[in-house]
Image (cartoon, rainbow, N blue to C red; front, side):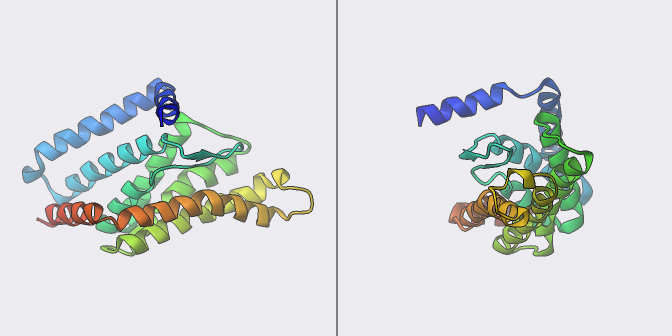
Length: 213
């Protein structure tokens, strides 16, 4: 546990200045919006909760439980805040929030082999988490839809741009499916498991009531 904590702290200390500025602005925007929530319109609530969810997802993404050498990792449900947002606000706003989250990930830790790979692995893959909004008010189905949406674009990127890493004799599609199934599949299962916790269910229902109030 001490070793895990030190690794997480090391990751936080490596945040780029531009990332820290963006996160700080998101958090300040959220605080200001929450203080004025009784005076604001629904669209402002959406912006406030979107900022909070992006910030929380980004921080959780640096608590890595496992990392793959060519990029990708398993985290403690870092996609879940975006999925919670999606289950409450629907697909279109959530795709926008997911895309913003993906661009923040790219700014902090870019992994580039081709411009099209960047497009697949960051804005498209993270934006696809917003597909969770297709199943509003059902966090389990939201988590499954968002996880599969993200995995699809990482799978395409793996087949097209990372097939050379496949072991001899293994088809790039099988290799990509195996790697992304391990990483994004496990992450999705963690999100579903966490979403079933009574505390998470209660918090989600309470936030939903505040949003519709």
